[in-house]
Amino acid sequence: MHKWFAIVAIGVLVVGVSACGGASKTAPRRGSTSGSNTSAASALTTSAEAICAKRNNAIAAVSSGVGSEKSIKHIARERAAVEQSALEELSRLTAPASLEPNWRTFIAYRRTLIQDWTRLVKEGLSDGYGTALTAAAQTQSNMLAVAKRIGFVACTQTN
Image (cartoon, rainbow, N blue to C red; front, side, top):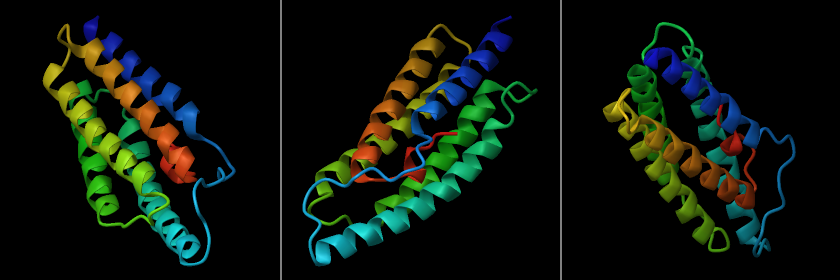
């Protein structure tokens, strides 16, 4: 019984949170966008969006196991690994001054999300599972809000 509850819960998280980020338009960017700052912001957006698109494809493959025989721990472990890989690539990017505060916050939320998924691996089906799942959903929601402020599209999708 607990196993099916956990599978349904993670499925709801994946589907529910993914509804938060399917925007088809790029949100307006805040801050200065003149001269070299515009090109730096554009370069950041282009690079980050490519990394996030790759991450989205990998997460979709992991999430396709929800409802199957894959265990919750296995899904959470795979998801944490995908998030870690994306974080490593994103961390190598440099944001222009106008986006720096939001960029640092976005990266910090990515780190926290990895910790949340790692906690899900450790919690398994214990009593702390629901708390860990809620924490991951809240972190993801906060991260998506920051990504939208920066003007990302692919980086606001959760799959």
